[in-house]
Amino acid sequence: MSIEPICRTCGMQYPGPRADCPICEDERQYVPLTGQAWTDLATLRSSGEYRPRVEEQGPGVIGIGSEPGFAIGQRALLVQAGSGNFLWDCAAYLDDELVRQINDLGGLTGIAISHPHYYTTMVEWAHAFDVPIYLHEGDQEWIGRPDPSIRLWSGTTLDVADDLRLINLGVHFTGGTVLHWPAGEAGRGALLSGDIVQVIPDRTHVGFMYSYPNLIPERPSVVRRAAELLEPYAFEAIYGAWWDRIVRTDGHEVVQRSAKRYLAHALDAF
Image (cartoon, rainbow, N blue to C red; front, side, top):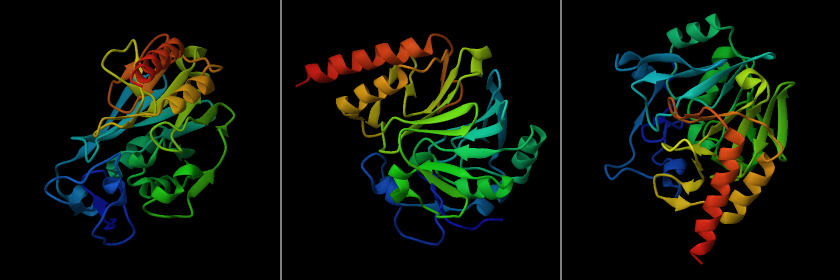
Protein backbone atom coordinates (compact mmCIF):
# COMPACT_ATOMS: atom_id res chain seq x y z
CA MET A 1 0.00 0.00 0.00
CA SER A 2 1.21 3.49 -0.90
CA ILE A 3 2.90 5.52 1.83
CA GLU A 4 3.70 8.61 -0.27
CA PRO A 5 2.50 11.64 1.73
CA ILE A 6 -0.88 13.22 0.98
CA CYS A 7 -1.89 16.69 2.11
CA ARG A 8 -4.97 16.42 4.32
CA THR A 9 -6.30 19.79 3.16
CA CYS A 10 -6.09 19.56 -0.63
CA GLY A 11 -5.35 15.85 -1.19
CA MET A 12 -2.18 16.38 -3.26
CA GLN A 13 0.21 13.44 -3.14
CA TYR A 14 3.99 13.99 -3.18
CA PRO A 15 6.83 11.51 -3.77
CA GLY A 16 8.42 11.99 -0.37
CA PRO A 17 8.14 13.77 3.00
CA ARG A 18 7.97 17.57 2.99
CA ALA A 19 6.97 20.41 5.29
CA ASP A 20 5.05 22.48 2.77
CA CYS A 21 2.26 21.95 0.23
CA PRO A 22 2.65 24.40 -2.68
CA ILE A 23 -0.98 23.91 -3.70
CA CYS A 24 -2.23 25.02 -0.28
CA GLU A 25 0.23 27.92 -0.09
CA ASP A 26 -1.07 29.32 -3.39
CA GLU A 27 -3.70 32.07 -3.07
CA ARG A 28 -6.34 29.85 -4.70
CA GLN A 29 -6.21 27.41 -1.78
CA TYR A 30 -5.22 27.82 1.88
CA VAL A 31 -3.21 26.37 4.77
CA PRO A 32 -5.53 25.71 7.74
CA LEU A 33 -5.03 27.76 10.90
CA THR A 34 -4.02 24.51 12.58
CA GLY A 35 -1.14 24.13 10.13
CA GLN A 36 -0.11 21.69 7.44
CA ALA A 37 -1.06 18.05 8.11
CA TRP A 38 -0.24 14.85 6.25
CA THR A 39 -1.44 11.30 5.78
CA ASP A 40 -1.05 8.56 3.15
CA LEU A 41 -3.23 6.04 1.33
CA ALA A 42 -2.13 3.16 3.54
CA THR A 43 -3.32 5.06 6.60
CA LEU A 44 -6.59 6.10 4.99
CA ARG A 45 -7.31 2.54 3.88
CA SER A 46 -6.52 0.98 7.24
CA SER A 47 -8.47 3.58 9.25
CA GLY A 48 -11.83 2.01 8.41
CA GLU A 49 -13.27 5.53 8.09
CA TYR A 50 -13.59 5.60 4.30
CA ARG A 51 -15.45 3.40 1.87
CA PRO A 52 -15.94 3.60 -1.92
CA ARG A 53 -18.87 5.52 -3.31
CA VAL A 54 -19.94 4.64 -6.87
CA GLU A 55 -23.25 6.14 -8.05
CA GLU A 56 -24.86 7.03 -11.34
CA GLN A 57 -24.89 10.77 -11.96
CA GLY A 58 -26.52 10.72 -15.38
CA PRO A 59 -26.88 8.54 -18.48
CA GLY A 60 -23.47 6.94 -19.02
CA VAL A 61 -21.88 9.06 -16.28
CA ILE A 62 -20.85 7.31 -13.04
CA GLY A 63 -19.70 9.24 -9.97
CA ILE A 64 -16.60 7.84 -8.28
CA GLY A 65 -15.45 8.88 -4.82
CA SER A 66 -15.58 7.99 -1.16
CA GLU A 67 -17.92 8.28 1.79
CA PRO A 68 -17.08 10.46 3.61
CA GLY A 69 -15.20 12.66 1.17
CA PHE A 70 -11.55 13.40 1.84
CA ALA A 71 -9.63 16.71 1.58
CA ILE A 72 -11.45 19.02 -0.90
CA GLY A 73 -14.06 16.28 -1.33
CA GLN A 74 -14.68 16.35 -5.08
CA ARG A 75 -15.85 13.24 -6.90
CA ALA A 76 -14.53 11.92 -10.20
CA LEU A 77 -16.72 10.93 -13.14
CA LEU A 78 -16.45 7.77 -15.21
CA VAL A 79 -17.70 8.49 -18.72
CA GLN A 80 -19.02 5.39 -20.50
CA ALA A 81 -18.16 6.61 -23.99
CA GLY A 82 -18.31 4.50 -27.12
CA SER A 83 -14.51 4.57 -27.21
CA GLY A 84 -14.30 3.10 -23.70
CA ASN A 85 -14.56 4.23 -20.10
CA PHE A 86 -12.71 7.47 -19.40
CA LEU A 87 -12.11 9.00 -15.97
CA TRP A 88 -12.67 12.73 -15.60
CA ASP A 89 -11.01 14.34 -12.58
CA CYS A 90 -9.75 12.35 -9.62
CA ALA A 91 -10.80 11.61 -6.06
CA ALA A 92 -8.12 11.13 -3.41
CA TYR A 93 -9.33 7.84 -1.97
CA LEU A 94 -8.56 4.59 -3.77
CA ASP A 95 -8.63 1.02 -2.47
CA ASP A 96 -8.88 -2.52 -3.83
CA GLU A 97 -12.68 -2.55 -3.64
CA LEU A 98 -12.94 0.64 -5.66
CA VAL A 99 -10.55 -0.76 -8.26
CA ARG A 100 -12.67 -3.91 -8.45
CA GLN A 101 -15.89 -1.99 -8.92
CA ILE A 102 -14.41 0.11 -11.72
CA ASN A 103 -12.99 -2.97 -13.41
CA ASP A 104 -16.44 -4.57 -13.19
CA LEU A 105 -17.71 -1.55 -15.14
CA GLY A 106 -15.10 -2.20 -17.85
CA GLY A 107 -11.98 -0.53 -16.46
CA LEU A 108 -10.50 2.69 -17.82
CA THR A 109 -8.85 3.82 -21.05
CA GLY A 110 -7.44 7.08 -19.68
CA ILE A 111 -7.68 9.91 -17.16
CA ALA A 112 -7.89 13.68 -17.63
CA ILE A 113 -8.00 16.25 -14.84
CA SER A 114 -9.46 19.74 -14.94
CA HIS A 115 -6.90 21.53 -12.75
CA PRO A 116 -4.25 20.98 -10.03
CA HIS A 117 -6.63 20.96 -7.04
CA TYR A 118 -7.84 17.58 -8.30
CA TYR A 119 -4.47 16.03 -9.24
CA THR A 120 -4.36 14.39 -5.79
CA THR A 121 -3.54 10.62 -6.07
CA MET A 122 -3.75 10.54 -9.89
CA VAL A 123 -0.55 8.50 -10.19
CA GLU A 124 -2.03 5.77 -7.97
CA TRP A 125 -5.06 5.66 -10.28
CA ALA A 126 -2.93 5.52 -13.42
CA HIS A 127 -0.87 2.65 -12.02
CA ALA A 128 -3.94 0.75 -10.80
CA PHE A 129 -5.54 0.79 -14.27
CA ASP A 130 -2.38 1.07 -16.42
CA VAL A 131 -3.62 4.15 -18.26
CA PRO A 132 -2.23 7.60 -19.14
CA ILE A 133 -3.09 10.88 -17.42
CA TYR A 134 -3.71 13.90 -19.66
CA LEU A 135 -2.78 17.26 -18.11
CA HIS A 136 -2.46 20.64 -19.77
CA GLU A 137 1.13 21.88 -19.85
CA GLY A 138 0.02 25.26 -18.52
CA ASP A 139 -0.22 23.65 -15.08
CA GLN A 140 2.96 21.57 -15.24
CA GLU A 141 4.55 23.42 -12.31
CA TRP A 142 1.81 22.15 -9.98
CA ILE A 143 2.37 18.43 -10.53
CA GLY A 144 3.07 17.07 -7.07
CA ARG A 145 4.25 13.60 -8.03
CA PRO A 146 5.90 13.35 -11.48
CA ASP A 147 5.42 10.02 -13.26
CA PRO A 148 5.83 8.52 -16.77
CA SER A 149 2.05 8.01 -16.94
CA ILE A 150 1.56 11.80 -17.22
CA ARG A 151 1.13 13.14 -20.75
CA LEU A 152 1.29 16.90 -21.08
CA TRP A 153 -0.64 18.53 -23.89
CA SER A 154 -0.65 22.06 -25.27
CA GLY A 155 -2.95 24.36 -27.16
CA THR A 156 -6.70 24.79 -26.85
CA THR A 157 -8.09 21.32 -27.61
CA LEU A 158 -7.05 17.69 -27.45
CA ASP A 159 -9.09 14.72 -28.64
CA VAL A 160 -8.33 11.96 -26.13
CA ALA A 161 -10.63 9.66 -28.14
CA ASP A 162 -12.75 9.94 -31.27
CA ASP A 163 -15.69 10.97 -29.11
CA LEU A 164 -14.08 12.94 -26.26
CA ARG A 165 -12.43 16.36 -26.45
CA LEU A 166 -10.54 18.36 -23.84
CA ILE A 167 -10.91 22.15 -24.09
CA ASN A 168 -8.51 24.46 -22.26
CA LEU A 169 -10.52 27.45 -21.03
CA GLY A 170 -7.87 28.90 -18.71
CA VAL A 171 -10.39 29.63 -15.96
CA HIS A 172 -9.21 29.14 -12.34
CA PHE A 173 -5.78 27.94 -13.57
CA THR A 174 -3.84 28.56 -16.78
CA GLY A 175 -4.43 24.93 -17.73
CA GLY A 176 -8.05 24.89 -16.52
CA THR A 177 -9.78 22.36 -18.77
CA VAL A 178 -13.24 20.90 -19.42
CA LEU A 179 -14.28 17.70 -21.21
CA HIS A 180 -16.87 17.67 -24.01
CA TRP A 181 -18.76 14.45 -24.79
CA PRO A 182 -20.91 15.04 -27.90
CA ALA A 183 -22.70 11.69 -27.60
CA GLY A 184 -23.70 12.30 -23.99
CA GLU A 185 -27.31 12.94 -22.99
CA ALA A 186 -28.60 10.79 -25.90
CA GLY A 187 -26.66 12.81 -28.46
CA ARG A 188 -27.49 16.26 -27.07
CA GLY A 189 -24.02 16.55 -25.55
CA ALA A 190 -22.50 16.79 -22.08
CA LEU A 191 -19.88 19.10 -20.62
CA LEU A 192 -17.82 17.80 -17.69
CA SER A 193 -16.52 20.92 -16.04
CA GLY A 194 -15.02 20.27 -12.60
CA ASP A 195 -15.08 23.74 -11.09
CA ILE A 196 -13.63 25.42 -14.15
CA VAL A 197 -17.28 26.11 -14.98
CA GLN A 198 -18.81 25.78 -11.53
CA VAL A 199 -22.32 24.37 -11.19
CA ILE A 200 -23.93 26.47 -8.46
CA PRO A 201 -27.11 25.87 -6.39
CA ASP A 202 -29.13 27.96 -8.86
CA ARG A 203 -28.98 25.61 -11.82
CA THR A 204 -30.06 28.39 -14.19
CA HIS A 205 -26.51 29.77 -14.03
CA VAL A 206 -22.90 28.68 -13.48
CA GLY A 207 -19.98 30.47 -11.81
CA PHE A 208 -16.43 31.43 -12.72
CA MET A 209 -13.86 32.04 -10.00
CA TYR A 210 -10.10 32.39 -9.66
CA SER A 211 -10.31 31.17 -6.05
CA TYR A 212 -13.39 29.60 -4.51
CA PRO A 213 -12.35 29.37 -0.84
CA ASN A 214 -10.79 32.87 -0.88
CA LEU A 215 -13.55 34.42 -3.04
CA ILE A 216 -11.29 35.92 -5.70
CA PRO A 217 -13.23 36.48 -8.94
CA GLU A 218 -11.88 35.36 -12.28
CA ARG A 219 -10.58 38.04 -14.66
CA PRO A 220 -13.25 39.27 -17.09
CA SER A 221 -11.01 38.68 -20.12
CA VAL A 222 -10.63 35.03 -19.14
CA VAL A 223 -14.38 34.52 -18.68
CA ARG A 224 -15.11 36.21 -22.01
CA ARG A 225 -12.61 33.94 -23.78
CA ALA A 226 -14.05 30.84 -22.09
CA ALA A 227 -17.57 31.67 -23.28
CA GLU A 228 -16.30 32.26 -26.80
CA LEU A 229 -14.45 28.94 -26.82
CA LEU A 230 -17.53 27.03 -25.66
CA GLU A 231 -19.98 28.78 -27.96
CA PRO A 232 -19.55 26.30 -30.90
CA TYR A 233 -20.12 23.21 -28.72
CA ALA A 234 -23.53 21.67 -28.14
CA PHE A 235 -24.25 20.31 -24.66
CA GLU A 236 -27.47 19.76 -22.78
CA ALA A 237 -25.99 18.86 -19.38
CA ILE A 238 -23.11 20.24 -17.32
CA TYR A 239 -21.55 17.93 -14.73
CA GLY A 240 -19.76 19.90 -12.00
CA ALA A 241 -17.24 18.82 -9.39
CA TRP A 242 -19.57 17.73 -6.59
CA TRP A 243 -22.09 14.97 -6.10
CA ASP A 244 -25.34 15.85 -7.91
CA ARG A 245 -24.10 19.32 -8.94
CA ILE A 246 -25.50 18.97 -12.44
CA VAL A 247 -27.27 21.28 -14.87
CA ARG A 248 -29.67 18.85 -16.54
CA THR A 249 -31.01 20.96 -19.40
CA ASP A 250 -30.06 23.87 -21.65
CA GLY A 251 -26.40 23.73 -20.59
CA HIS A 252 -25.04 25.69 -23.54
CA GLU A 253 -27.37 28.62 -22.95
CA VAL A 254 -26.71 28.48 -19.20
CA VAL A 255 -22.99 29.02 -19.80
CA GLN A 256 -23.50 31.85 -22.27
CA ARG A 257 -25.98 33.82 -20.18
CA SER A 258 -23.87 33.23 -17.04
CA ALA A 259 -20.81 34.70 -18.75
CA LYS A 260 -22.87 37.72 -19.85
CA ARG A 261 -24.16 38.24 -16.31
CA TYR A 262 -20.68 37.84 -14.83
CA LEU A 263 -19.17 40.34 -17.25
CA ALA A 264 -21.94 42.86 -16.64
CA HIS A 265 -21.29 42.77 -12.90
CA ALA A 266 -17.50 42.65 -13.19
CA LEU A 267 -17.22 45.53 -15.62
CA ASP A 268 -19.72 47.60 -13.61
CA ALA A 269 -17.31 47.42 -10.66
CA PHE A 270 -14.68 49.51 -12.46
